[in-house]
Length: 416
View 1 (cartoon, helix red, strand yellow):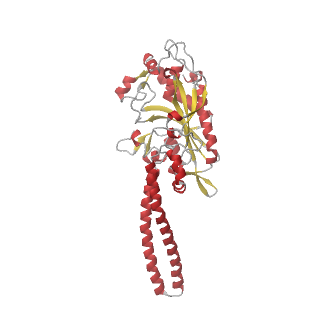
View 2 (cartoon, one colour; view 1 turned 90 degrees about the horizontal axis):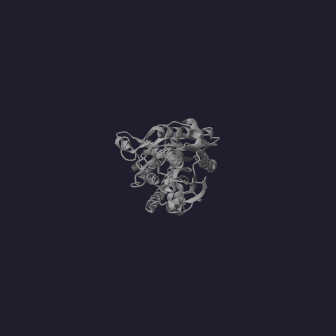
View 3 (cartoon, helix red, strand yellow; view 1 turned 180 degrees about the vertical axis):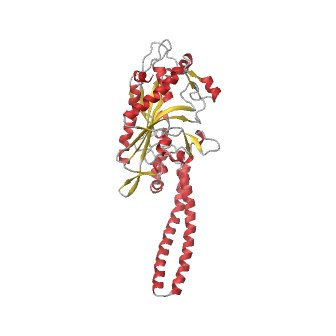
């Protein structure tokens, strides 16, 4: 959640940064009106509280001098002040609740070094890693390869559920499992603790990481239960520390987890309708870190490098992109996307997204640590490592042979 004090005290500067992210200006103006309504009420409250405290001292003096009538007269005045304070508190609580609701719909402020842009076309390429293979034949798309090899059954997926669900068969099912195990082992070798989490979480958990209330239409909700299927392991992993003050926080907390992910893909109608690039259910291995603010940038770079090294170990060509303000996610202050080369499309496609969220989620989730006697908000970071289905796609397309078979990257041999 955005720091409301920052927005109030530096309204124009903060507004300018948020507008670069495409926030609704009316939402910010409505928030400003609430600040303006709140200010005189706060001042009036402080004045009444000061007067009540002053009169209470006078009551003590009169009682000490046994001037009971005067003391009782002032007590009546104090009682009236208390009633007025209660009315003000009710009014202020109402405004504060409205401000909180507004704040839940305001995205995170982008970092100053995030490139300014409107959409994905304005993202800035950082570098390319590995050179795409030159084929001496026309490379087939993964969906065609999957059907020919009897690896992917799209019709059975529709039969069992609906479109954008797929049945993985034979070596595709084995390769999916191998990739999950390899990714978890790779991340553990980089110092990430493996965690296994629930695939369903409650509303409070979804709200703490920013999925609710803004993105409810893209979530699968359990009927008659206050539970949602998770869109990513970031949600349960981050919430492990919700409403907690972290002890012994000498070094960053680094976690990795495999989960299936569930998304309605609202707003993606007509995009990637063929194959398994965009599914309602897909596997992913996630990285989540919780750090002190001063360690945040270093950990962010390490997470990006971990995801890139994982792709390199699979010999998959990819590139790194610095996302512009208009393409940043709701909770992100800065994001580096990793895109893998897809030969049949002759382009790079997203396979990982690593984001530094700063204090945004920690403020919602009340994730704190002690600095002396003071409680400090932690920083949270998250990143895909990797989207398993898209990694399978990349392997199928980049390692296909002329006769329609698939070679398997050497690092996966021991898992198969």
